[in-house]
Image 1 (cartoon, helix red, strand yellow):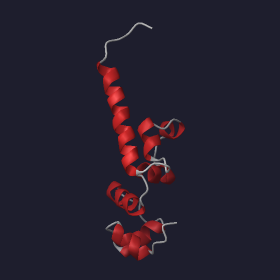
Image 2 (cartoon, one colour):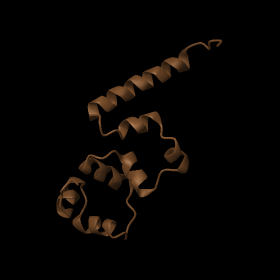
Image 3 (cartoon, helix red, strand yellow):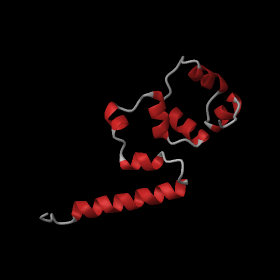
Length: 103
């Protein structure tokens, strides 16, 4: 979908052509550094890459975290995603410091 050659993707992800070829053929398991490089080169969140590779645990696949849902939403820009995550974290932090209320 990105319309990149193997050589272009390898360059963008800071990998050798030979190593990327081996990854594509299933001869190696990518490290976290490699996955991060590929996710940045392809502009795909690392969580999505991990999910594609089946590396997230079953619980995470069944119930994605709020932050994970935000970061994998293609309708949002990176700036919008980060803004939403910042607001979400602020709400969580405020709830953690607020005195318990009787309901």
